[in-house]
Length: 236
Image (cartoon, rainbow, N blue to C red; front, side, top):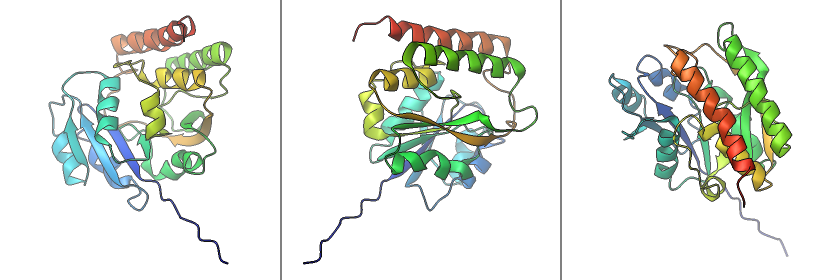
């Protein structure tokens, strides 16, 4: 008797939060490997330029999230991807290379990891892609996460993949700069397997909303350090 095995193909949705990224968003959407993903969702987070129109022209499904905040945009995109098995997050400024999506999604698809984060630090940094204060702050946050939660990641970057059901179980709350580190903290608290994979990181097009301004840098640093401490002292 010949056994029959069901081949399960996971559906991948790509979520790209975007605020005033009209120069880059079309190229970013076009570069996503079409044969791997079910859909590309661009979350227009209150842009005042042609971000939405350019993303739509490139083939993305555009949704609006008027409430400002990186986390708010990511959550809106994840909620819109209601038929996805795996969600891949990446930035819309061209710094993340969508062609590397197989590296990010692969370990999740193969059940080797629950959360995969692209490591700019262990990968290749294009000159000018990540300022010194950004690299130093990132290393400090990674060290703090290792100290408090025993994680062994090397970066806290935006390019990441996670199963949709897993993300839903994390009950994400941080709607601004704290979203990326909250995901890692809550995954670690649940004993999930978190993996870093080296990626190539490029200079973004346009001005960074975080490291490009003093205010953005201060707020991002504050949330990145506050969130791990908050959940460390919080009872289960």
